[in-house]
Length: 222
Length: 329
Image (tube, chains in turn purple, cyan):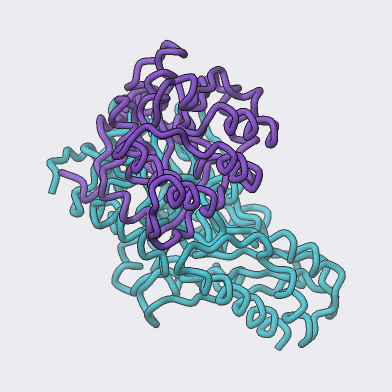
């Protein structure tokens, strides 16, 4: 991993805890899905995106998304960490598959708008999953190899790969994170407040020559 | 084992020159009970150049200083500390702690400096996993088995606990460390020496010693009259293991009144954790049988255990109660 200049953030699961029910309900209404309700809002959200991708680009139930946003709670370390990242000069962008209305509501509700140089959603990006990420990269004139995307799902890792950026795990649930670590993310953090240190470490390693090119989970090589 | 070159400097200045020349690919070698295992385990972070400081004069000694304190050379063996009559007379709690470090065989080889600056003993790091300390960007301890060797008090990228016992036991005596650096001698408190996971020279390490610095000695101030201290340690096996939780506690007593206190937990965080809330609580109190329970009720309020290690907090609180009971006996 090279020096990190930008960070792309999907609010669901990375900036805030979302309830699973609204996303599950959208999947039920639009795709007649009757599967078991997951206890993770993020997993429900990304599962829904998978369905949208597989079957058709049907408009999502915006009202339910906004309901999810209204019930979301931002993790307590988000604001101090975003403040620190901004001060470090890291360019922060929202890259989300939520609707424009849902993202606008999210940033207003949690007073987070000031931190982001770019806000990309499925409406202004014209697509979901990797599409908002690619638009955010272009919008901020960033090279993908200098950018991280935080995620807590397999679909998120795939979306990051699709956009060419480094997928970094938010290890919200240790059991799920252990499973996700097998999907070869570029790294993982337990809490968002570790991200500034993560970026500093990469910068320091590049500078000192104490640097490992790619992080591969599993046993190291000698 | 990775190919290595060994230097044998005869002075500290010469050692610093060699370390400066090779940067982070060199490391100080004394007892070798940590370093050689890292090499044997083929860890990415293991050095290619060893700077053997065993032949350097004036790094292996235990001597009383002019003020009634004691200075210990960093290359002094742990067994020599355990056998020291001077230390036993002045700081019996330190000797008790040293005797609980690993096994007699290892104490014959391990040095005080090595114990203070040792690498963490996380099973994922030592097993060669590509973690934060070994060339990767993830903590497997945070998402895997963290019952024994991981922090229950939060973390910063790496969640392994600081494993040393000597630092935990030295902090209650307000001991200080002396470092030789290219700019001259630097002196730090033990808390400043091992502040927990931080970025130094592009690496995550538990201590602040830079690649071209050498820990040369530890200075312990003279014991104050009325000081009583105790060291407690719980480990997975009765002998030869790292602390699941440990406690070094000292009380400055006037009769039964506590004038001052130091409470330091080991084995539960990325550093020896000084619990100042309990210290403040204890000041002015009378040492009694009820005090342990009261102190436990205010201890470790900001614990943040991982999935499998909440029991460490219970252990630490239990040690606090038993430590106070022991000092009251």
